[in-house]
Image 1 (cartoon, helix red, strand yellow):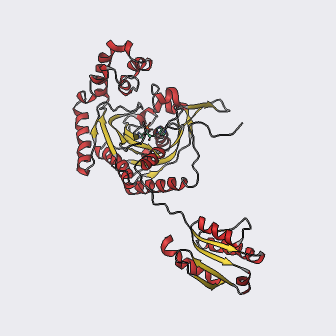
Image 2 (cartoon, protein in one colour):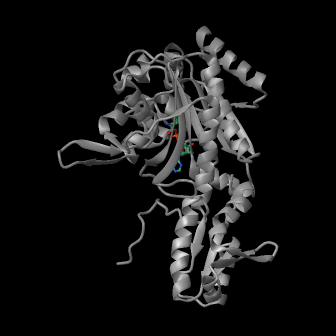
Image 3 (cartoon, helix red, strand yellow):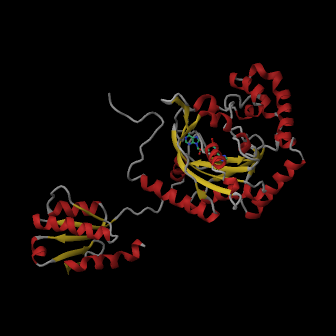
Length: 427
Ligand code: HAM
């Protein structure tokens, strides 16, 4: 049997992993500027956390979780998203008791969902997400969306659309739910099997159905925006006013409901409008989840956040033809000829690496020409040549590959020389 990675997973190989490193560094830097601190939580949790946190009626909990019993007979689930785990950790570690509130956190890590793989949809994917816990000020909602847009734009994306909705508070949602049930009930038999269940359990999710999206009752469904009570309406207006003040454009979509149960008030998604991006156009999504911390056993705390997958971000960069500024080069390649020179090359590469210089050498006993070719392939800036003559004279030849200029130096000066030459470019 040929061993292959499981369906819906991917290997990230050199050549691509540099892009991941670059993007992760940029995202981390954005978080620094917005003052979000990193949290790392376990990749698996008790299944109950997601049942309670993400919601029993969601597709994620019903169909998509990687759940197994461990050897101790506990039900364990590979995390399908980062919010429930972050909130669990916030409660468990009593972060709500720290003096600096709100608690602003970010994470980057793998998530697992048993979905049908297609372009932009994997079974293991990496989410970058942020969560702000402990403030229900509308400026936090605006900040979360600003950070998300800022991240995409700084990486070069232009064809972006921020789609916004308000799901209102509990009372608004209850009123809207009643209206939805009344509206869809006469059509119940015409809806898909999932929606028939949703109509009883969580009617809001009917609006999100891919199968029934063209049913005539969809177009005339009651809009949540008509059911927002005064508090929810005021909240929504303030969030929009902050976005307006920052000059962040958005589109309102009263049918945007999101696939997770914990949302209220602000819900948003960022879509790619790039041609050739693929069938799934959502780059990221998030929203407010006041009440989730209590559901997970903590004190009354409001929260909001969002998450994006790095895979979809990279797809969007490719669709927009954006090259990340990744330089693939090597500071120095050591060409060594003869046994003595080879010994010296091992010692010298050790010393240079300790001094901060990026060094590679030949390991395949190639001839001089082959070693120079390897240096070229690795895009070496300098080639240090150690031959018999150089060894005899305690010297090295060093070639600047860009200018072609070659000089000889006493062996003990090479570290200082390279260090100085490279300092500008390597800082
Ligand atoms: P979500 O909409 O389920 O929300 O996922 C957020 C993002 O994760 C999506 O927009 C997409 O970029 C990425 N994603 C989801 N599933 C896949 C997949 N199978 N393959 C590739 N990428 C995927 C959440 O997970 C919420 N926890 C977001 C949030 C944080 N809300 C508040 N705080």
